[in-house]
Amino acid sequence: MASPISLHRLLRERRSGLDEALAIFDALPPVDPAMLWGRWQGSEIRSGHRMEGWLEVCGWYGKEFLDAETVHPLLMRIGTGDPFPIRSLPGALELARCVSPQAFTLPGPLLRLSLLLLRTRRSQARLRRMEVRGVVSATMLYDHLPVHDAFRRVDDDTVLGLMQAKGDPRPYLFLLERRL
Image 1 (cartoon, helix red, strand yellow):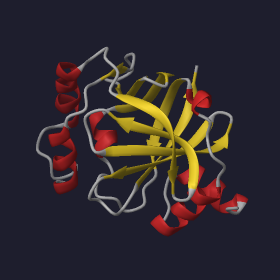
Image 2 (cartoon, one colour):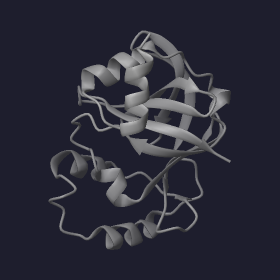
Image 3 (cartoon, helix red, strand yellow):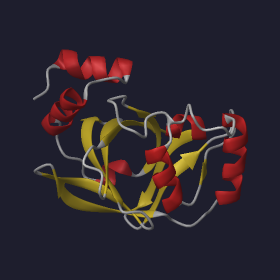
Image 4 (cartoon, one colour):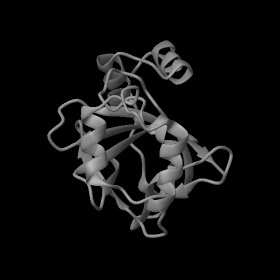
């Protein structure tokens, strides 16, 4: 099990080396899919992944799990407005892998407003139990992206997520905290 000090630091600072973050993820217990029902606010764990900073620039709020077949993996938020789900675009994932958010020329507020064009009410993912890194746990499968997010339980209202994209050997880690 990860030491309480390293887990506390990860949760407090949202920053870790990849090896340390993976050791913490691997030491945490699995998540039952039903535990995820509801709305969760997300934050990234900075571990050197190429996508770091993109979700923040775009106004990512988190995820919403309504049932095993109805998942909104990308809840966005403009300012203090209500979070809303958007469609996932495969091309956006490729752009995020190639260009850092600091090098992107479209200002953050304009980028976030453009996300209104992607607004949807349709589910964009589903939830299953899958083995990831040797443990069977709740795993979210995107409908239109070659990506899955595996979850491990920190406590009743916090999970650590690990996003793995096909062809990218380095996972992206994030934290989800339950919001009522």
